[in-house]
Amino acid sequence: MAAIISPRGTAESYNPLLEYLGEKLNKKIILIQRRTYREINQLIIEHKVDLAFICTGAYVTSPDKNSMSLLAIPQVHGKTTYQSYIIVPEYSEAKNLDDLQGKTFAFTDPISNTGYLYPLFLLQTRQQTPETFFKRTIFTYSHDRSIQAVVSRVADGAAVDNLVYLYAIANTPEVKEKTKIIHTSQEFGMPPVVVSAHTDAAQKRLLKTIFLDMHQTANGIKALETLNIDKFVVPNENLYKKLYSPN
Image 1 (tube, one colour):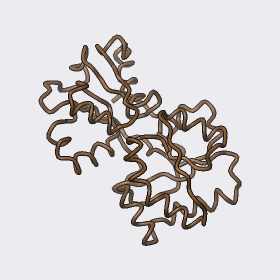
Image 2 (spheres, one colour; image 1 turned 120 degrees about the vertical axis):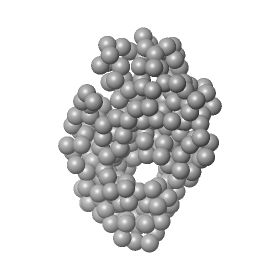
Image 3 (cartoon, one colour; image 1 turned 90 degrees about the vertical axis):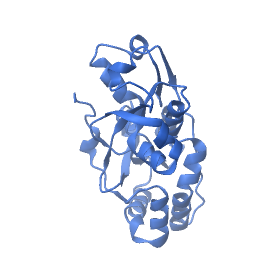
Image 4 (cartoon, helix red, strand yellow; image 1 turned 180 degrees about the horizontal axis):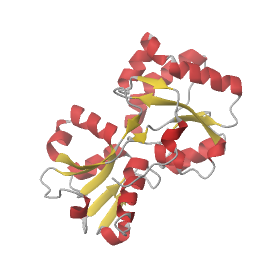
């Protein structure tokens, strides 16, 4: 699993789902995490893992997408898309990205869609780079850490996954009180679940059935609720063909 949220948060949130998979497959499920999204991609490419939850940006930018195959994508609040939010401290006078020029900014991961690639696109439309636009940048390697960087005033702004942010403000009063949104991106395809291209066809069919039927069982519903996911659905490859267009 890519650390879209911190490793501890990922383990806690995904444990019911891992238990569900283990029950359905009658196998022990081993959770493997790495610090960066690129490392998770490499595990899939080298077939060192059978299944992975990866970032949209990690899938789209992978130089070897033929080594992985889309299995399922989450549906949240009836949608299979999500967005990037640029957030700042509640007291900040910044009203848009331009107001953050010369400030400290937190990115998530170098191949994170919402946490790096999208804000990078915004800078490119301004003929800028992170180095020329911001005074200082940091990589936090998870969206909740980026949010906390803004809360704790380590960063003057951050680009984060809107689903992680909305969950944070609903469950952590401090985040709601100390941050605000100044920019919302277009819609992107949800971070997908993928398998190695080397995965046996029968195994892939079984895994796909387990994910797509999860919302129809009591334990599956429990696992989905822990993750705030309605259900898993069949991926639409078109969601991942072109990510960015000017707003």
